[in-house]
Length: 187
Image (cartoon, rainbow, N blue to C red; front, side, top):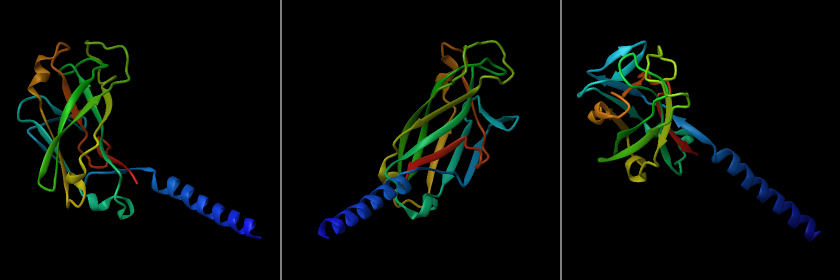
């Protein structure tokens, strides 16, 4: 009788632990509430950072994170277009520096954009092979925990002009629902 009761309790506790691991440790995404651009040229819905002064800024509301649960960590998840110049080639990659701000604190978060397209070809590709993906973080807890908003900014980087691969250009879709930039977290 005692053994049967112990097994029942143990099974119940194990079920709760598995439920917690499956339900509460699933990845989730926070989309931006707004996205603003400055001095940026658009081409087919994508905003290209091509010259100094070009910038894009996303604003997130961390209170919208799923179920009010405080996540364990927070990451930038990026989908952008990368090429070697105006009407450029395919397969290019680059590293971006994003300014992430919240609670009066600003830190740089590096994101390496990987392009799965091969080969790298400097000849005009008509947009084929521009898509690149990456992530950065984790973002410091003190930036986002308890913050009313999180601001992520990306500015044109002059070093792109001097890249051995050409004048690297990066573009973002600024529709907040586009998944061009999201915050990913474990809940």
